[in-house]
Length: 280
Image (tube, rainbow, N blue to C red; front, top):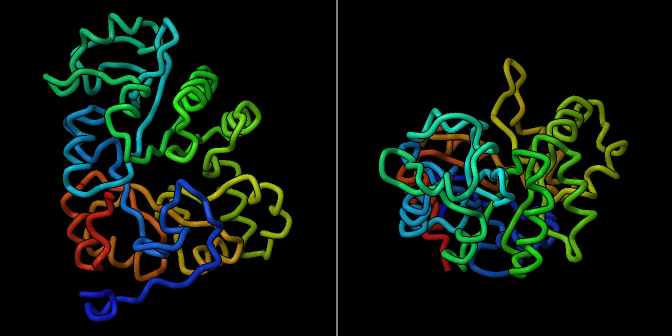
């Protein structure tokens, strides 16, 4: 059943920038369709593990949102928190452990931690939305992407705009990027004042905005914001959304991607809109 037959708004034909990482920006089955991102693998009990990633890919996800941090001996490890305590049987800062020590730690009671390079090799047809959580991760990320030729399979994200700028400077070939806190805040605050023109240089350096529905009490994802981003050639991806009704509302508004911790819920919504599975 198509989105029109289901009573949903058909996908708008935005003047997307064609970006290899964003498969909906190029002609094909997914052209102008919304993207589904499995946030940390969309399995909170086993977040950022191979088991979570495999489950999401098997379900039909093509995009995995991950976080990376640097171990004491310079390995780029997929992990969100600064410390190990919340989701593992380890304790202390990840950055104070070597990779050998981290390999002995378990996530969710049974799963091993994962290096970024190993995830890229394990899922060769999958796209990774990579949040660079520490300054040291930038050079390691660049080295791995260059060595594996993974430029079209990754998006470099960070709340810290300076890290994204460093990635751009260091890479021989560009990768997709999203805006950090400063860029996103300026677009939210200046957009209603027709300030996108003043942000043209910043906008030219990113391919999408990845934002929450609201930040504290400030609404972010509203129809006018989505429309302004689309006019600037930017996709709008929203995190983290687990309620199906909210997913439908955002997709009807015209957002271009949703990140979720509930893989089954988002898969069902996308299936209803005839854009599932998204794997090749």
